[in-house]
Picture 1 (tube, rainbow, N blue to C red):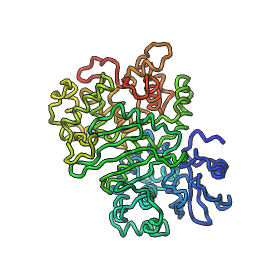
Picture 2 (cartoon, rainbow, N blue to C red):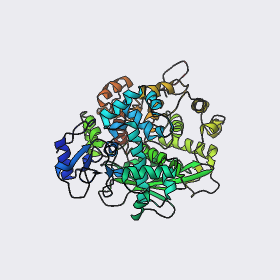
Picture 3 (spheres, helix red, strand yellow):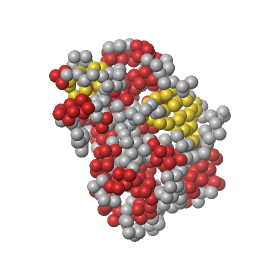
Picture 4 (cartoon, rainbow, N blue to C red):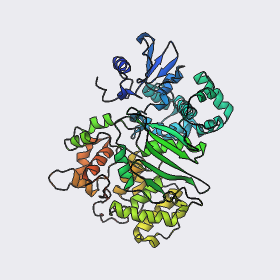
Length: 515
């Protein structure tokens, strides 16, 4: 059975029925099965005996099932279904609204403010969500919080008061009431199941849709890892998080629970419960866990240059970064130099201007990356940066502090790039690279990249940026995935330091360089 090429709406009922009966993992997260006789909703891969078709209703989103009065299955655990990245990727209005909901907007702001942020009226936003997801923005927000709470209750030993805080509830009584109303049980009832806690760490599953090339992701991050801030070995990624007053650290590795786990393992140490949902969101973006590789491959494989690369590495994802400002600094330092040289200079900057932990977690995890407040007044030429690069980072820090640029989820790619290239020293390559690695934007495309210009032709020639942009029009809205495939193919070895950041020579412009 073939999956539909696009899934903006609920798949045909016959397709849903076949996927449910065969427990087809390709449909996991694309729809949910609600059983009217039990008032429980499940993933299509649920191992429980299949209910009769007459008792089944299909929903596009977990929030739609919960809004209709169904509660999540305790066996297949809908909170572990991979997210449908088609909703959360790119510049569509619903994608930008969902990114803001994921960032907790509706916990602090009104629905009308959310609508205004994506340039819609409140009624228009409600209609859009109802048409596309079958649920309102408030329903999506509520379901997201409750399912995250359910995961914490099931997988950790966190006290229920901390679970409530981590899920974004202002009070324990409000959390208990919402949980009981939605799930017909008290939060403590889930505590009967064994958790995956290790020592004092909070351990959580981060599900994804297979295939997923975790080794390639680690290779990419390893070549750029900053000693003291990050540690990347053959099996995992770790880094310092938080601030000097309350530092913590995390580790991401494979979930070693059989071939069908389809999840990464997050170990959190010293993280505030109030930040856990944000941390999970950052890591899902950083490791590109919401991507749908089949949809992406279906679009890009139409190009004969990309088709064999996608067959060779079907699980290659878009590596993002932990923090937008950190990626921006890396991008500026990486202008026209190799990955290895950029890493050396960025590591030097992190050690000189970052915050050294009073008690390091280990020799590799001992520093926090510096903030814009620190670098805006720093003399960065002292660590070997050219005066031009140092000035760009200073101006970039100042622009972030005064709000001229940002990494906000409601920005379109065009808006994001336009704001950043208005700064001196930031050109199209730098802005597009930041969109790829700070926002995880699937359509970001640094056409000025020399590696890309040489990688697309197969005759040894080099394409111009204009010609490359024209060729890449057919790759929309997944151009960033084409970039990653071509960069990877250009590397002589998995962990090689071949530059994916070299750019075409800067054009002569009055103030800014084509970085």
